[in-house]
Structure formats: structure tokens, C-alpha cells
Amino acid sequence: MQVQTRPPFIQAGERVVLFDGVCTLCNGWARFLIEQDSEQRFRLASVQSPQGQALLAWAGLPTDHFDSMALVENGQMLLRSDAVLRVLAQLPGAWRYLAWLRVIPRPLRDWCYDRIALNRYRLFGRYEQCLLPSADHARRFLHD
Image (cartoon, rainbow, N blue to C red):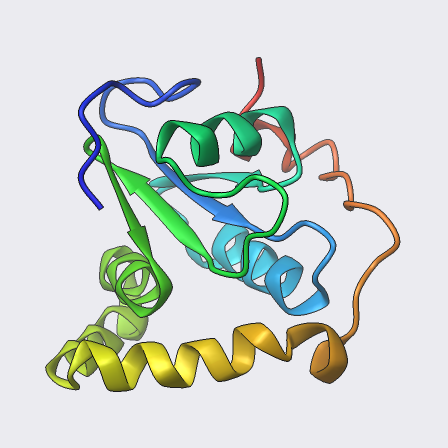
């Protein structure tokens, strides 16, 4: 999804991963990124945070119900499997080799992604509220 204006809260060159802050699976993804992204290429924001809400509004996406992981990079927002594969391609080590999954047609990749996303609470559970990052991880999250 191409957007014309500069995204809020994001500095030039920053990459931000948006995730569902009450989803157990999504929080696991955020923790995975913190652990694996040794070069700290990515910042994080839950879709429930003011920063996440502003980024969703910037991209013209619903702010009350969002069921995809997103990546904001270079004034563009990638969604679903495109976002996941783009993130994996930029991680160090063997993770980047999973980017070859882009050869699978997007409709099929997104269909698989959507099956998991639509059932994520039932399959993996949910938190009552967004988890707060630990003090040593707080710098990885977008702030005002």
C-alpha cells in the first residue's frame, strides 16, 4: 500500500512493525524480533498504542479492528505475508532465507496468513491488555 505523506512518529530510514498488542502469538512475534534483530533494524508499535493508531489512520486502515501484522518502511505499509517476508529477509542469519517463500503467489500466501490471523485468539490466546515492554526493550518501541 503506497501512502503519500510521511508516516507519523517515524524518522527517516526507520522501519516499524505494527502488531496486535493483546494477541499472544503477535507478542511472541515481537519478542522474536527483539531477540533476532541484533542490528536493531526494526522498531515496534502495538496497533492499540497511540502511535499504532496514528500509523493505521495514516495508511487509511481501520483503527478499531486490525487483523494483520504490518511493516512501515520507506513511506510504504506492507501487510500480511508481504510484511512478514520482508521482515524475515532483513534479519541476520538463516531467517533471511525464508524470504524465498515470496515465490509462492501472494493470494495463496495471504490466504494461509488470514487463516491464522482470523483464529489467532482461539488458537494462541489473548491478554486482557497490551503488555508493556520491559525496561531494556522499551527503546525498541515507538514513543511520542
